[in-house]
Image 1 (cartoon, rainbow, N blue to C red):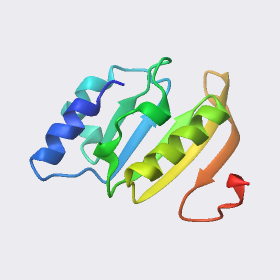
Image 2: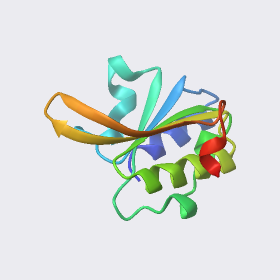
Image 3: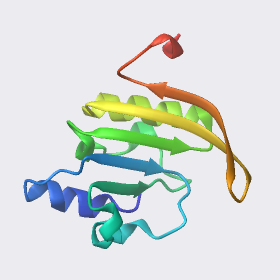
Image 4: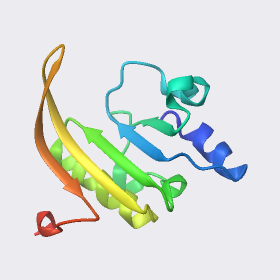
Length: 120
């Protein structure tokens, strides 16, 4: 994972972002998200290909709203479950497929505050 150290430091200072974004692909280095004026209200965490959701230390999401956006549906669902188990207030997950520069297709979507039928 990249970007979570800054969120942990922020939480230790008693501050919380409005939302945490967990991505498996992102166009910029996430380690300095807190220095970007456009992203002060949210934290950006990048999951590396070898990060395993079930084994990740996700305590930094306790009580927060989390948006998970991955390309692999099974990995996205596993990450949503891991965030929920870690104590996130709400987790919204999307699995997306990149079609071209400006176009994505949503393959699956999950919201832990709503319909739970996806678990079956």
